[in-house]
Image 1 (cartoon, rainbow, N blue to C red):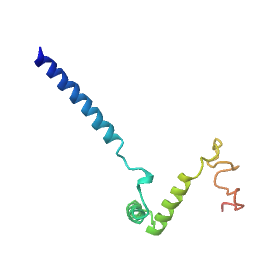
Image 2 (cartoon, rainbow, N blue to C red):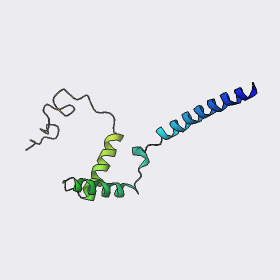
Image 3 (cartoon, rainbow, N blue to C red):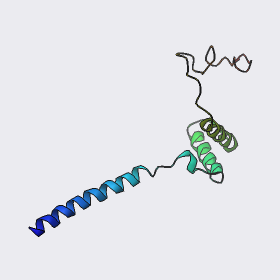
Image 4 (cartoon, rainbow, N blue to C red):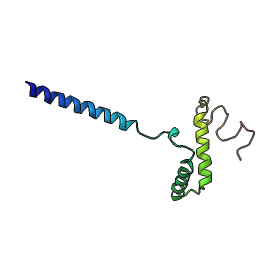
Length: 105
């Protein structure tokens, strides 16, 4: 009787341990907040190299600026709802630049 209980206890322990390991692994993905200012230029260089391989000329400086703008976007409050078919929040037409007075051309 004691042997059966030990086997059952072993199985329950293995399942519980596997569940804990799974929870730790699934939560170990990097997030935006994990990338600090020291790593940002390396990320920009990598992004620039990948984009160049894909046929887009993006300098590391431009990639770094885009990453900074992306971080600023994530830090900002959520935008207004996007109107269906416009592509931009709170503007009349997609890409017309009505918010800043430019014509988009």
